[in-house]
Every structure is written in C-alpha cells, then in structure tokens.
Image (cartoon, rainbow, N blue to C red; front, side, top):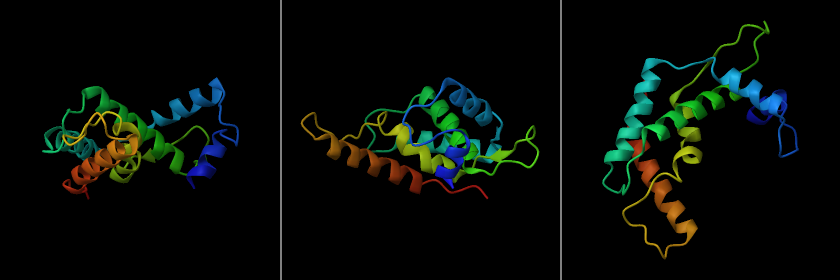
Length: 142
C-alpha cells in the first residue's frame, strides 16, 4: 500500500521528484489528524530516549518535531484517497511513529557504548537497539 500511495502522489521509479509533487505531499501531511494520545506517545518516546541509561546524547526538540512531521507524512502516504477530492482525513497512529522513528532518529541518537573506532554498522546496530528498547518501554495508547 505504501508504494502504491507514493505512486498516487506522483512518485515513480525515478529517484527525483518535482517541486510540485513535494509541495502537494507536504500540504497533504499537514491535514493528518494527530490525536493528543498519539502526541503523548511521541513525547514519551522522546523522554524515554533522553533518559535511557544507554543514551549518550538526548534527543532535541527539533528531533521531536521532525518525528511528528515524518509520522504525519507516513500516515498520509498510507491512507486511502477520499472519495471527495477536497476533503481529506488521515490519522497518525503510534505505528506510524514507530515505523518512521529509525529514519528520523538513528542519526541523532548516540549510545554510551559507541567508540570512535566502531564501524558504521556497529554504531547503527547499537542505536537501533537503544531505540527498540525505548519503544518497548512505552505502552501504546488505546
């Protein structure tokens, strides 16, 4: 469904997109509904990453805002197009946050056990583990 949704937005096999397609996708993502329980989930994830014993650097406010926008964008790419073209509703869920979190947060996280001599693959593995542990600590809203 995601690939089909991206194609419906104008993303084809070509790696580059036009400014018009990017603008349309951006405008569409601002219409995603973001429930307060989902906002609390996002906040709790950021706090958990900040206070995790394995975290060497806290996530910033900018990281939280980027995660919110990316999750909204993912939600809009995954939801069906409405039957009425001027009415659009999609709902961001914790699953969207979890799904996009690695792409948004891994380069911002630092694990205490990272060494300058570690390979990029090892650093990525340590950061994924940290993020997975943080996600596992947070209950999903109902």
